Every structure is written in C-alpha cells, then in structure tokens.
Image (cartoon, rainbow, N blue to C red; front, side):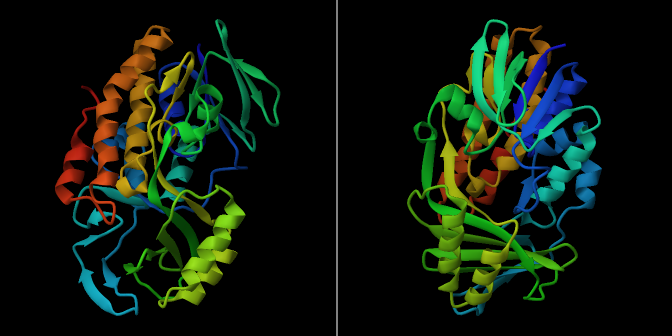
Length: 366
C-alpha cells in the first residue's frame, strides 16, 4: 500500500485523501492549523465539480448548507442604492442555477467529517524539509518525528510550503493581479436578511452577505495595491485603515476587521509553473495553479484536480511519473481556461458566457 503525504487540510487535500483511500492508498494529511480552519468567504461549486461532490458522497449535505440569498443591492460611495437584482448576485451568479454556493468553513467541515475515520490527520504541524530519493520522500516536520512517504502532494495554497521546498521561492511562480482581498466575519449590525450589499468607492469596495440564519455577516473587502509583505498583523492594520476611510459603514467595518478572529487578507494572484511535479512530489489546487478568487473557480478546480490526481495514480500501476504526467495532461487546459476568467475583466466578474463555458469544459471520465 503506497503512502502519500498531503500538505494542506482545506478542500483539495482532504478530497484527494478520500479518493486515494478509496483506491487503496494510505493518505496522511498534515495541516498547520490546530483543526479545520474556520471563517472564509462563500465559495462556489460549479459544473463538473458538482459531479465530484456527488461521487464523493457529499452533494446532498453541501446543498443542505448552501447559502440562500434573495438578491443583492449595489450602492454608490455614499450608500445610495443604484441597482438591485433578485436574479443573481456577484458572489454566486444566477440564483436559479444549478451551481451551489456554500461557506468555505462549512465545506471544510463536511469534508473533514466525511474523511476523518479512515484518513490520518496531523493538525498543528507543517513540513520543514523534503528529501526525495529512490525509496521515497523523507519528510521533516516542525513538531512530529521525520517520516518517509512514497509520494508527497502540496495542497497548501497560494503560499505553498511544499512548492517552496521542492520547486523554489514563491516569487518565481506567482503573478500579482494588482489588488488584495480581505475576508472576515462580524455581527449582523446591518440587519441584512438573505440579501447582499456591494459598494465600490474609487479603488476599494466591499461585498457583505448575511450568514448563519442572518445572525452574522461575512465581509469581503477588496482594494487595489501592488505586492505587499504577507504579514497578517500589518495587513490587518492596513485593511482597517482603508475601510475606515469609506463613507459607508467605514468606522464599524474597521472595528470589525480589528476584532475578527477569522480575519484573512491576501493578494489577488495567480500561480504558473511549467511543471506541477518534481520527482515524487506534485502540487494540487492553489499551490500549483491558483486562479485567484477573481475567477470564481478556485474551489471547483481544486475538487476536480483532487479527483483526477487520485484517478491517475490509481491507474498508473505504481508509476508515479506516468500518473503525474497524465494528471497534468488532463488538467492543464481546464486550469488555463479558468485562470483566464480572472484576467478577462479585472474590474469585475467575468462574462456569464465565459463562466458557463469554463466550468463545463471538462469531463471526469474523458
């Protein structure tokens, strides 16, 4: 039974672990956080990714916790409503479509609950060194003892530790898209009821949606900027200052950003590598091909990639090189198509036609 270490306990890593276990592998997931990560924005499961969820056995559970918006309002910089829609929202697209919008932490929780019985999880730890040799990959951990695995998969996001150790510095592979996005939770001080509000003021703006039966809100605040140091404390202060300058709810949102336990801020960036694999190590999801949240397809790509990688390994008769090549051959065109969504219209959502084409341009059994 081949052993596989997966770095990253978010979405792609645990789904890969599920399918590897189904195919007779022994997966281990290592995650820096002490448990499944809370917080995060609403994410979309679209097109062929819905088939992955169905085959994984989670589609009905995901649908049960989906967001249920009635519509949205678009505000000007002074808070006046200039447009509204009961047909679509910026976060999820058409409200009558088949796509499923779900809070990221709900999706992470469901996947973890579905896999924890037969997948080894190492929470509160991270990979510090990789030694790829003929017999496997020796992995050093920050907390636990060193172990050797047959294969290693980096599913640890935009700032992938595995990618840095196996491929080199992050700056060699990331392309900054000219903005940052911060996401955090707060009490529903706006008394929103299944209704989103969006506002843009110059080079900054926010989207706010109620969650948890309208008892809370999730705030997505975006602002244009060049590359910034990835320092959480500095980014939190910067975000609070930028939000405070807004004329609409600025002071209250700034206070919420400073107090939020789930505060997150990162660059809108993409990852581009000539090869996703090196030796016994390969990359999955944002670690290998981050399309940025601007694409609206990051979660769907992660789900599809996890399924395809597991399938390729299962078909390879122990030849990881052939499996990795097959995985990359199948996924690269789909990734490129979806990455293009983020650059088609940098100031706003991609066209409905482009999204429809991109999300369905893949067949799991192809």
